[in-house]
Length: 242
Ligand code: URA
Image (cartoon, rainbow, N blue to C red):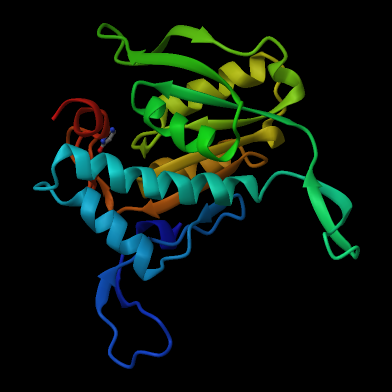
């Protein structure tokens, strides 16, 4: 669609009390109700600016990525069902609140998705986390499932699928197919992602209309090597190696 092809635009961002607002490139909008892009706040844009900068050293890359991952997990948890729950406070009054209903698990797409596991554990203390390894088959050039280790009762759980960079979507699509083949209904899968390509996220959202995607940013596109641009380079290398 037209919106997905439009490049991300520079828009003024900033708090209401400040008259002069800096300009920053904000996420490309995606016209699909199952794609949830984090609010383009000055905080989020500053964090993304840090991790996109090629001169950011590894320690800072990890620190600022973790802050964005925390925002994604917190927003992702908003998509899980809650039920009414009343508590009595120390002032002997009742507070009518809610509590989470249902079991969850994380599933990381190796290796970069593993970088998001700690952020999930920070919010959900003893969460079960499964893993999926998908790599490109050198002969067919198609994604191939090499390894998976998933909780045995995964079909009873909401699954938070973790992968920081969504380029062509080949791995994420195969990972979702693996989850569905293990009995996880599409509507119980939540895909958490830092930066997506517009073409990848759009076709993924159309292919899995009941699955929800929470991303921090939809970027401008892909280069000839299928890297996201402007992107941040190879997330796994920057988080684990460089
Ligand atoms: N994976 C990455 O780490 N970066 C990209 O740009 C695309 C896929």
